[in-house]
Length: 202
Image 1 (cartoon, rainbow, N blue to C red):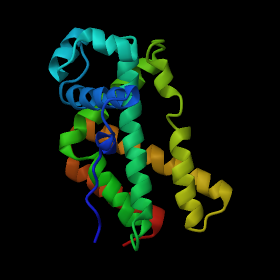
Image 2 (cartoon, rainbow, N blue to C red; image 1 turned 45 degrees about the vertical axis):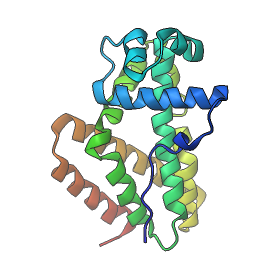
Image 3 (cartoon, rainbow, N blue to C red; image 1 turned 30 degrees about the vertical axis):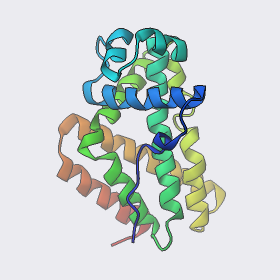
Image 4 (cartoon, one colour; image 1 turned 180 degrees about the vertical axis):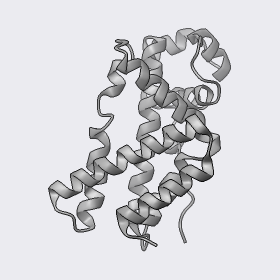
C-alpha cells in the first residue's frame, strides 16, 4: 500500500534551536503566502498573519525579499523530498511514482505555492536582485534525484540527464498551463499522455 505523504516534513523538527525556529517560520510563511500571494505584503502584515513580530522575521531572514526566496526554496525542497520518498516506495513503478508526485503538485490546496514559485521566478528573470538567488539550483538541484531515477531504470548517463531535464520542463510547463487556464482535466490528460510516451506505460 502506498503511504500518504506529508508535504511539510520539517514540522517534525525539534523546538527551541535557531534552525528549527527558522524552519517553523518558513513553514508558516509558505502556508500564508501560498494562500494569499505576495502582492504588497509587508513583513509587518505577514508577521501578524503568522503570529510573530516583523522584527522577528527581520532577525531570522534579514528582509522581506530574502524571506520570499526562502519560501520558494523550501517549497522546492519539499517537492524533491517527496520525490525521493516515492522512489524508495517498494514495488512502486516509476510511472506511478510520477503520478503521485503530479497529484501532490496539482492539489488545489497547494496551488498558491505554485503561483508563488512562478511569481518569484518572473521577478528573478526580470533581474530584480533580491529575487535572482532563487534561480540558483532551479534546474540543477532537481537533476541529481531525477538523473538517479533514470539511471536506476537503466538509462546511460547522457540519456538520463536529457530525460531528467525533459521531465522537469514538462512538469513545470503543465503547472504553468494549469495556473493560466484552470483546465485541470486537460492538463491531467496531457500529463498522462506524456507519461505514456516517457515510460511507455498504458
